[in-house]
Length: 96
Image 1: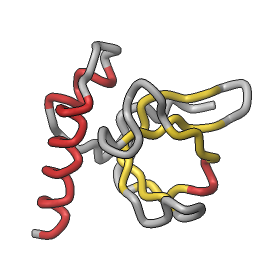
Image 2: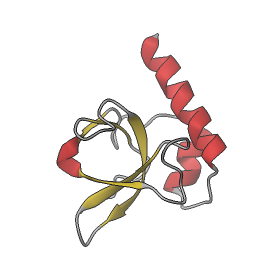
Image 3: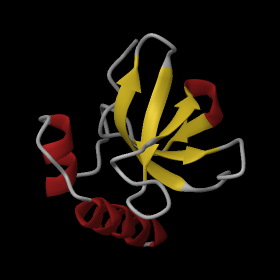
């Protein structure tokens, strides 16, 4: 399975439908993405979601340029606060 870490996605199924999350990891055995938003879904306990139940808002060609995303893709520790600020900045950029 491809490494989707650092992608920003929108849930298209489930009770969190429409929510914007960051992919913080991949469960290769069950082919699930691990999603977090820093508020309802913390980095300590990310949401497991099938790849088909999300819509990619960024990808490996058009990554969101933010220091927190860089830290995440390099495997460094990230805080929930940094993740919340990153997703808020992404939402502001999408509105413009």
